[in-house]
Image (spheres, rainbow, N blue to C red):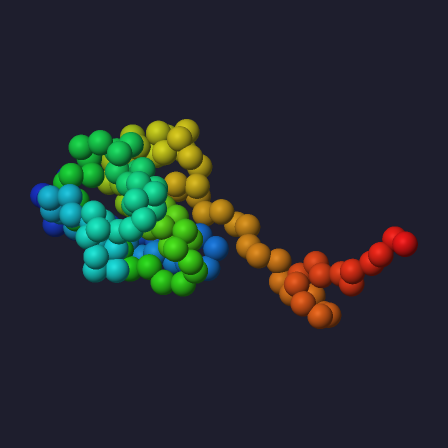
Length: 137
């Protein structure tokens, strides 16, 4: 395990999900996590908060040595939460190399970005796969 407190270094990682991008900075500390300058404990709804905490729960006491600040932009609430979750997991995996395999076995998207995107609009009235309504009789 790397000991950042002795080396006085920081770790910078990014997480992505759809249009959301999370930039995370980890410093030696006492386990504080801030997302857009708000503590993780007050993020609502609770399901989003629990989703962001998944890599922290898997890492156990390793996460208590770091203070993590995350700046998230773009996308929706779920995309921002997934991007934040990925950024935290990447930081923890670099901080403690043994966590990488654990994260990959639990959920591959913790470390590897999901490449799926929405389909671009096609020429015509509306949606990406919009068709004129037909009647069979």
